[in-house]
Length: 342
Image (tube, rainbow, N blue to C red):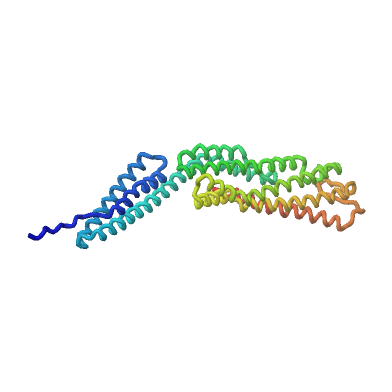
């Protein structure tokens, strides 16, 4: 009698099955990465999804095995292709959904903080606008900036690891920004309280010399602030990346902070400060060079003796015009900046 023919049984190459099994820890790792705040959910979701993917790949492999006359090659190839398709598609979906959840969570936290400080920010902006009209410059509120930074840090724990790190870096950046400007603002106040360039307060040559020295100090501080404004976005972007924030997201945070703080406008304001300081220095030097040969009338105007050369008087008037011109341009920028802030 002829020997009975063996019927081929459905099978998939063991290597393909091992590949499929290895996708479980890979899938679990990805799910954990995007659900760091909920480990049980991440593990359960990873296991359930992988079982569905593995089952789908096996069913597809069996259908291919049946269609292609019980070919193990067909079943193995189909299994591998389907596993990669299932895992790849699910991975893209998980990453996309997680990105949307992260954005929503971040907007919720930052939006909540902005709403909490909305009235305070409105009051400070109005006070600064009033100060510009009354005294020609505005004093920022360092306490408000510190409280805002504190709130950023305290709410960071509501976000995922990388976004929390970014928010903490934003708080550090805000404090650094505040610390960088406060000494400068204090010295501006000192200069104003001394009388600035008001000739009525320049009762001696020593008074004029002390104002010139203070202006030189302010120019040096202003140069440091300009350097800070131009370099701090890149430095803090690098700090966020080192803290584990993805590069693209770190760039978005840095760009957002720079736009929110109007860094480009602040640089222009600081450049106008330099021009004002130069004009003030020239103005004061004319008064110093010809000290004792000028006086002030009842309207506060400076009158020089006939012994003072005409070109010195013309230069003095030109320096005064430059101070007014650059000051007006700077005040306009400050008003625009405060008025357009949300």
